[in-house]
Image 1 (cartoon, rainbow, N blue to C red):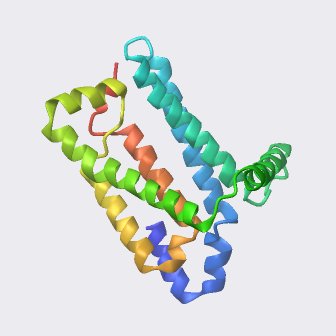
Image 2 (image 1 turned 180 degrees about the vertical axis):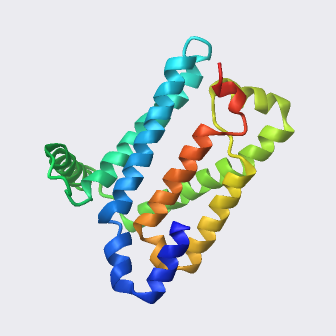
Length: 204
């Protein structure tokens, strides 16, 4: 619903759209940060509850999910306005600036490299959402392996949500570069982690 509201606002009043849904601003970004922190919390709870009963690979996958969510949260937080004037926000801002400066100094990423990395992410996302669930349902050995290492498999409704979101991002350029896209992806991944198709392996 929030995405549809963003689309309507994009055509109705672009100024208000930029004010509310701009990738560098506002409460939408803070909601995204909260969702990413929630992903970290869910991963930490899974690790605390299941580390004795699951494989080391299972715990590593959850640790990677937790660390990735914190990294993305810090990245987004560094670009948001400091609404509460907290010293923590200033720390995120400084660290984010240092990270970008170091990246520019150490790694000279050209346009071809950026495009290649983007397509790599798209390919990884396509495999996770469209190929892996099919393999999981059709191959018993693959199912056992995925359950052993603890990869949460998206439900069909999660896949439909990703398809709709992708179509909207392609059709409406304003959505593609806005904070609403980050919010939607964070919400979908949180739902996948909370209720994957292989929910049984995340229960003791």
